[in-house]
Image (cartoon, rainbow, N blue to C red; front, side, top):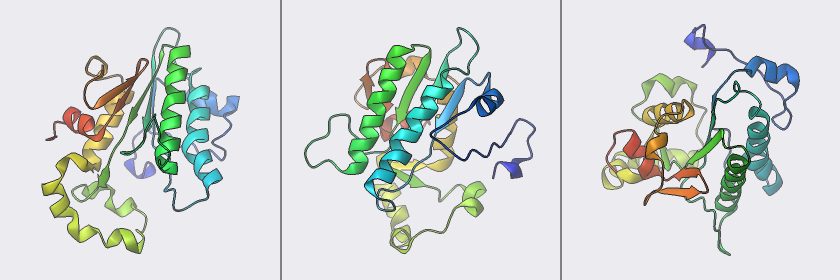
Length: 215
């Protein structure tokens, strides 16, 4: 997808190990001031240890490495893509997904406390909706059968519960703009923006508000 853009500003780096960032890799990223961390996988597709590594370890190791990238005295915005249902205060029956995503958010908040110019934030999308985003459809991987069964209900879901929909085009735009440092003055808490220290965690309705969508 990135190669097809044929944009001189796009550089593709094939990185084999998301737990390690050596000087060769970091030198290619030097001067960067933002990142959208959208790497993840369903908890139903891997075992517990693998899920924790992909969801939590990879994100935290990247964040720690990227703290060295921006020019002096310039902030770096690290936007973590979490998910609706994640919680920083898990109860006894909290799912693996909810618990691990929440743990990751807490550790990212701690990184921000330690390094104030490393501006971590988290967004919790809900139903990822690509129905009206033609530009990405040819890049989507095959969907498992159980997910295809829900597709006919998409229009009903969008009409009945718009606050739980995350249209991919608007989601991508808002995530990118957050990584560029926009909206900071609007992410200071509220009913759908949880603050952990100085780090904002946006529920899906908060993303929709930034995108200009109905709540």
